[in-house]
Image (cartoon, rainbow, N blue to C red; front, side):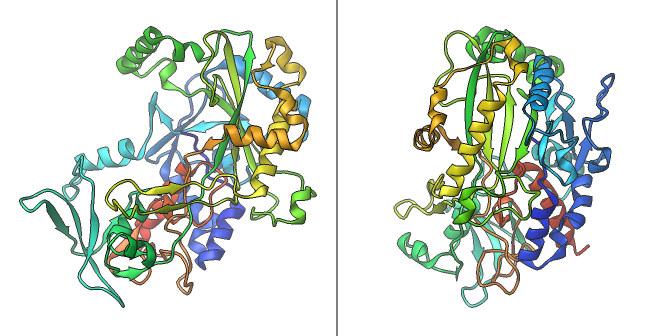
Length: 467
């Protein structure tokens, strides 16, 4: 639920790569504001914790600054000041400049998650007569009325009816918004994809489309035991407490379930003179672009199970600008089943180097005097950071997915022979078909992908309407 757009330079890089200025920071900023309804809390002073000029206040998606876990606020900021370096204060990471530590913003409104389903679909389904939603319906494929060289998509096919399938025909266009993981298999089941995969699955090629890669933020945590009982670990352990908190939330959307477990977020770069740059080009668009992200969580976030006793906080890390790529392929023996997903995590030395830097920095940060009051003690073998080999092994054993996948139907310029969609969101070489979801994003954003998708979707709406 973290609401973060990324930094200005990466949108300008996006715009340059697709040769369309409409994807630049300046042109997308109005859509970011249009989407958002920033909530200024009653009775809480948040002056200096956000930049009003960076936000919208009347949009569909409610956002707010985290205000729970108050015990963490002061030591987080005090330790940042004591550590210095990359821990400079950033008033608002959604201002177009991300680097530094600041208050986290989340997509929460009135104690509830503010989601596309709640803010758009549910609202629109009551207000619009031209919107019908079929639930529990998995689309098999989109249907073309012809094959190469220039097919036109005219219908969507899904299970049902006397013959086992039904089709809904489009008068104008079909818009696919099935997400990074589902859009590629849907297109391939429709005969739109790499010819070798289609042939292996026994699917007739409607149009050969190049294979594109999966990109995800990579995540790893460092847990610390603390002497306060104000962490969220007891919620995980105690089923009775969980039920009581759930009943409270269901009653009036208040209590612990109305907020998240992290309050601050930090974006940072490895040093410009780092040795890895002798062999690898910097993947960021400018020196304003972060290589990694750190979150301070008020609970245990680690691959090992939560210990039966004790209270914990976690330094959580995301790789903001990974260069390792994975893939999504059809299962040739069951093309209608689950796709074959290879996330490709840590395939590149650069990604490992960045995570080593981030983890070592966090270990130093947690040694700041501000944490002594809470007896913050590492609940992992801190000596793994003493040399690169042991720290690399630790990272490979404990890393996980950030669940921010993009790029599997990548957008490119109209004159490119690569990619899947053009800057008009239309699938290249096909009439009557567009894709509007995270799969089209050509570079993984430095921020969490949710807010980026909202802004792109708002722009797509105008592009489709011809505004």
